[in-house]
Length: 68
Image (tube, rainbow, N blue to C red; front, side, top):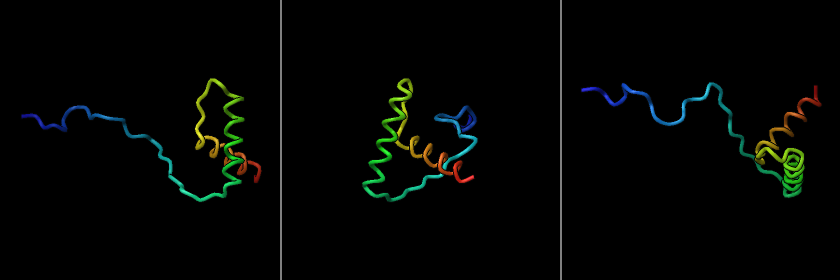
């Protein structure tokens, strides 16, 4: 009798790299500014679906790049 785990596994394959979740609290004003930036990105790149998380990542990358 074959074991159930001998065959290919179901579901999404494991990713080679992972991302850490970073929950944080921000002011309403900062949230509004992020939403405005998110909307600008959506307007500049209409063929892409950009999430608010993607917009926040882009802002962080840009801020860190400006530091160096």
